[in-house]
Image (cartoon, rainbow, N blue to C red):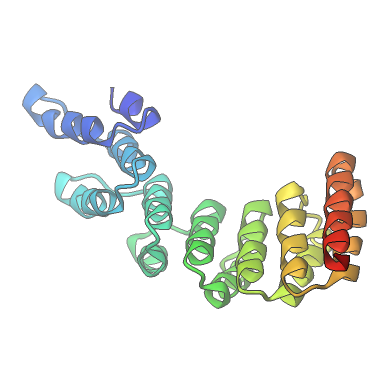
Length: 220
């Protein structure tokens, strides 16, 4: 039932059912708590997600990787990048090793808050934690660079993905292209469009048409 509330984003229902479990002589476990935290995350209720995270040890339930990842994602959606990084930093002390999901969520939290330097720093810390940055990690870092107008960093990361053999999606190229647009780096935009042919020919056509439209507008 709690999982149903999670999938539907019914965070109040999920928390209510969790609180009623002892009355029904049912003992909350990691699965039920994780579902409730995920429901709070989907409902944009980061405060309740963190409150439940803190209460879990009192219930005799110990948070796991899924728990922490859901809590960090809740902070990400709530724009709480500092809290997201704090939770990530507390994981090793709790005996839980950060994984790609929790790190990617932390990078996304920094990206959404405009903290591009922290996003890049987090990306660079992943190998030291024996974690390989994935598409989500890179895309969040590229997007953070794009929003900050740091196109050299965005394009560098885009190239780094190819070297690391990390799949580059439309999202990856879109962020790279957008970073060049803001600084009028038309040549680089064209290069990104050409490179994106290897990922999606339709997307390449769209980018080229968009570039043509901008050039026409510049001449008006």
